[in-house]
Image (cartoon, rainbow, N blue to C red):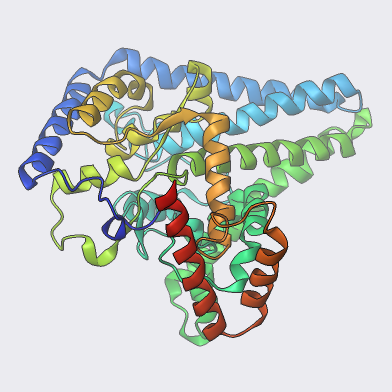
Length: 411
């Protein structure tokens, strides 16, 4: 995941400026074709998904009123988990992108929609739509890269605290909606600011987020379990809601990791991005900074069609149900211009993303130079790099990278 400008072989070195602008023109044509053909079938699709989600959530909550009985608990928890995933992924995420604003339906519009999530929609739309999708995979600009808590690029200096990043990533996955809420608030940066210097906007956003969390927690952990008391199902219903939120968080985190973080997805340096980035240059950055998940139609719906992450990053405001239609055209464009269309099944992408999390938690070259035979000496080296000063770390790091290069050349 080394920033593209520092890679030995730049994957776009063969493209001329004219090629890049032609890619932009061809992608604009694909986008316009979908815009011109949006209509009743698309509107019917999103209305059907919303209707199914609401009925599934209501039905699951009704079943959980009798969750003292194990079959009811399993059925209700499963249904509620799916309903929450649909609400976040295929419905909330995509509506708030403005994908359905063209319908002019005030009930299904990015300006009015609120979702079942700890983050208020307005805060999320700023950090996600305005920041992430504008500065995709630019190190230091796109905080979606590791959410500010992980080492995401080989060019970032390794320090011992990064050894814990697999643990931080797992904890973040379990409580993902709250992690996103903190990220949207830029909580770390603002908490480092003296209290009297924090902006009024930040204070207002904190108040709004806490209000949203309180509202969601009251629904899931007070009202719904309380309704189950007559059937003796208070605790099982409480556990079911907690489980459904956990399932939703783990699923959402996995889908997003698979779209942004597998091995082979490119990152970019701020200084390498032109001050006035052209449409074609922006498109190429989206093409190389995303990855897809192959799978069934049901899986695509459950991911919010973010299994088509490449297409989503290229066309974030197109209806999500049309990504599968444009994907072959986009892939053909990758092939035409000799670019890597990064796609793999869900298990492979999850493994790849976690492999990168672990690899980057360690000094550059450590995993590449470690095997069963030399593991004790490698662990001793790692211990020294962890406990000794920066000078020792730098020397050991240089030695590891040199050894890794020799191994790569020999292979």
